[in-house]
Image 1 (spheres, rainbow over the protein chains, first blue to last red):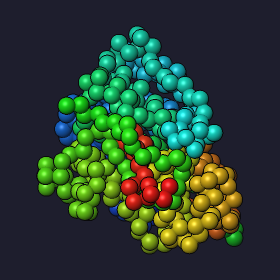
Image 2: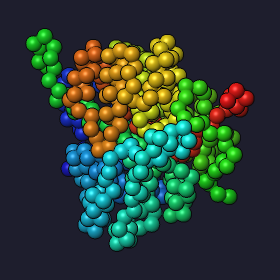
Image 3: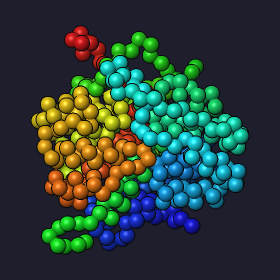
Length: 207
Length: 206
């Protein structure tokens, strides 16, 4: 079981209390505390409203899977496993495998950047998986794939697809924050873990 | 009334720029006179009530407040670590790589303001994240920030080595990677909830 009160970035990065990076993180106490508050606000809100916790965990596990960060994928899959049935987990697993691609990619809206535009595949889940997710969650996952891998292809039409699936303005903001926050959290934890594992060539002193 | 807004006659930027840009929302922000005490607290700085981006994010006040306080400490807490210009550069490189023209304009201008190196910053915008930014420190920040934008995650030990070789200690490396990581958050909000516009004061000269 995971411990929801633990600092999730420390957990995902493998930072132990009293370690070198724990001491460095402590010098940005507001950043550390508010990254954790962001996790609490977006993934464990007291009043989840029209965006149920189980759907938030599905989105988080999907986003972690697209990032190829195994420890984070296991963490969010663990939160999800307490709430979801086997059909959702199976559909999620298949969707991550089908949606995964290299990013950031896609077409620019600015004419002067057309030479840098690339062709990036648009993903939608298989019809049987979309049935398992339902219309709202399917639209959320399609939007999450856009934001994670093709953020420069975002558009009013993409927002309209959420509205058509039943998302209101408050929900669209929360979904956008969830996917965008995870894009930060996963990178912060990943980079800290790489830094922690890198050998330190400081005049013979190993930390 | 639809909650999705489009701007057929918007004066859009053509490419990346250090000049100031506006930003218009695709989803209705809260009205200023509808902001409660909770919303105002979530803005952190009350003057942000004038800004449609922050009034849009105020629809989830707890997430907005935590986002803003994370941002301010990563970029403006100058107790040790990386310099202000280097943190702004990490934000600008990330925005250049992800394709956020609005974020890149704000943080390229900030990197110039903090460093005086307008030409180096302009090369980043014109030629991209692989441009020579003039010295080993800036090139190491650019390489690491660009690598951290990769999905699947690709930032690796060689990026840490590059930053160390350029003189960054571990506190500085943590600032650079958190500045870059944070803009993977900010870019996705600004790109997906609205778009940049060239402000009226600049149209006469363009």
